[in-house]
Length: 127
Image (cartoon, rainbow, N blue to C red; front, side, top):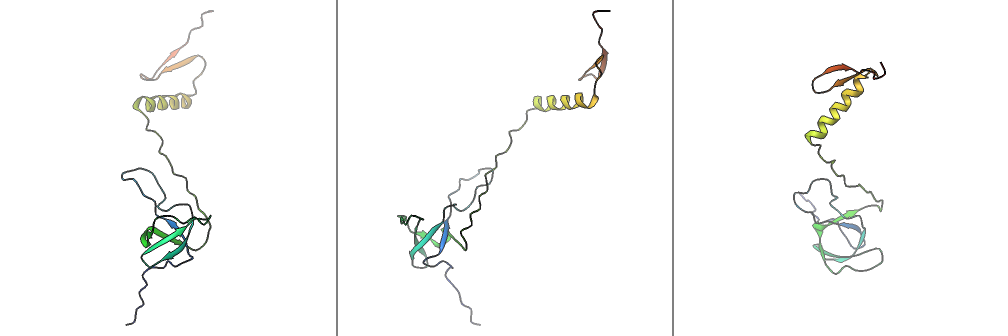
C-alpha cells in the first residue's frame, strides 16, 4: 500500500494565523488563533519564519503546530462574551415582587402587602 505522508500542509508563500497563548481556567470564549494574517517567508517543514502585511519579518521561528493555514483572507471576528453578574437573593426577591405587582394590576383603592398577601383598603383623609 503506497500512502504518501506529508509533514504538514504549510509551504512558502502561504497565508497563516498564529496560535494565541491562553490562560488556564478562564471563563468565556477566546479565539485560538490571531486575527492578524501573516505570510510564510521560509521554512524547513518543522519551523517557519513569517512576515506581517508590511513585510516585517517576525524575529521568532514558529513551529508548524503554532500556525493555521488559511485559504482566503476573509476575516471573521467574534466578540468575547462576558457573563452577566449573578443576582443576589435580595435582587431576585425584589424582581419577583415587582413582577407580582405588575401581574396583580392593583386598583387605586387597595394595595397588597407582598410578603403576607393581604389586601388593605386605602382610606381617604378627606372623608
